[in-house]
Image 1 (tube, helix red, strand yellow):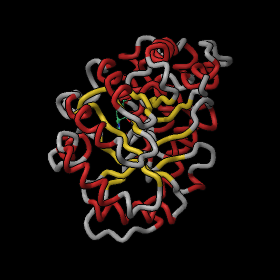
Image 2 (spheres, rainbow, N blue to C red; image 1 turned 135 degrees about the vertical axis):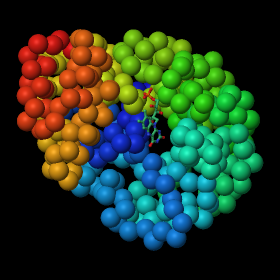
Image 3 (tube, protein in one colour; image 1 turned 135 degrees about the horizontal axis):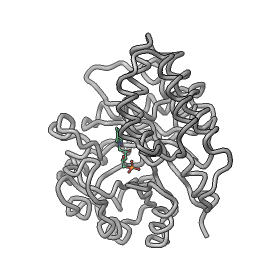
Length: 316
Ligand SMILES: Cc1cc2nc3c(=O)[nH]c(=O)nc-3n(C[C@H](O)[C@H](O)[C@H](O)COP(=O)(O)O)c2cc1C
């Protein structure tokens, strides 16, 4: 049986290098991460400082694949080759971002209905870029018909793999994943596929891997934030974890200190941590109350005190 490969999903605002490094110091099971997207802009001269999130020294243990958001073939090519020259042999193109500001400009998932635009983009870009290219896509903007039209065309391009988030753009991050739609992709694509969407528990993983026996690469986003032990459980095929509370607490403290070291002032650090808690809190009993308390915190000492308290009383 093929080895299970687990990817950390890109989550802009969350899975940056501080998160990835801290995560990898406390948990096991992930094989690599796709970094949150970097958008190409007009007239940008790319410099090392623009890709700080990707620097090897910031990514010591979890290999990272840069992701580009762009609908401009020339800008994309320039940035892709800059990334290659900076040491990245593989890159990912974002065809999944659902935000109206992005989609309206025909970028991200907004490009999915425009099969010919994607085809023309790849025709132009692929002969010119030095790194290998993978795509991260949704099933479509409004319907899975988009991807079903696109896949036969993608079959003729030399792509490393397709990461498919089994939702449409209009669904954003809500509503059911469309497993029939993903099955149709498995049947229609000759490329190696990575499944993504709502892997939240070991049971979810088991049922998906039974349903898609030919798929052995899986990408997890929110599930890794809420249940950071999930990749380890999947790799061990066992739900039990040793020293769970203590390891979780150590991770949360280290994450706080990691951001405290790089962000400018306690207000920014607290905002960052408060953002994370929408994903962390569901692992705690009575989590609405926890979120309310976290939201009210005004300084780092209060935050660390609340962490200590949460772990004294709760059983994630
Ligand atoms: C806050 C947030 C930010 C995201 N940022 C990105 C991004 O930069 N690039 C990308 O391809 N997908 C992004 N995604 C989508 C995730 O990578 C993933 O496809 C989605 O969350 C579904 O997987 P999950 O159910 O395992 O979380 C983002 C999702 C969320 C919730």
